[in-house]
Image 1 (tube, rainbow, N blue to C red):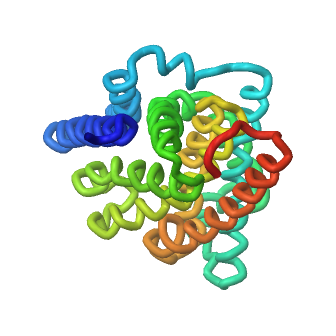
Image 2: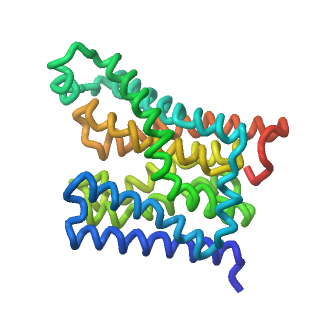
Image 3: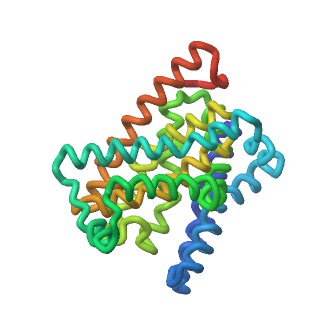
Amino acid sequence: MINKDIRDIILFSSIAILSALIVDYTAYLTGGMSTITSSLIWGFVRMYTPTIAVLIVGGWGYLKKCLKIDRRVVLVFLAAPFITFISLLIYLAMIIIAGVFTPHQLESLLSSSSIDFSLFLVLTFFNGYIVSLTLNAIFALGEEIGWRGFLLDKVQSTGMSLIKSSIIVGALWGLWHASAIVLLGHNYPDNRIAGVFLFVVFTVSSTLPHIFVRLISSSVLPAASLHGSINAVWGLTIITTELPREVAGLGPLAFASWILVSIALYLLLVKGKALGMHPQGPY
């Protein structure tokens, strides 16, 4: 007989992926991405398919468990986007050091104003921070209830380590995007099949930070603001170099920046657990 946790993992993942496929195929058939409004509707409905899967498999009671709110949750919620900002700064440092920082698209956008790149970056982070805590967090919450909420709990209930849990949760998170990439060209309009594999690596590399804020807060809300910050500012990687996104902002350079951040946060978790500062769980 299949272990109940494994059965729930399979059932949840299947429902989330299949329902996302239905949303994407509907958009593909109807041209539902033709306007900003239709794109927002598509994104909102799609991002709540993991929540639908949680409700089917785990029931309404699970939402109360993972949506805990207290002072610690609020503080981590407010701080979480800075993890993305740090990763983005690491990425920018890498392309500058490598000599491939070529923001020609930005220069054309800024040529008619007195704003230089440094000020533009500050404004981007400021605006991105506000959006991360508001609209983007509301959208991302639909996913985080599933990925860093129900799925993470079920995976860790099997006794898997933090690293293995991150890989499994990140891989399923990435595969959930596959139909959007193949059918709609989401994130990888020119290399859709390769994009599926690349995005799985991207989501695996960026999953541990989401798990970090979930574990230290015991809520998925900070994971939503972190996820929202990626959606808010990571597009900057595409317009700061002439390298294809498959190599740069959604490729190996991005993976490297997130892996560095993940290693640092993993060490903090291990140290915190040794000091009895974080929730118990298989690390």
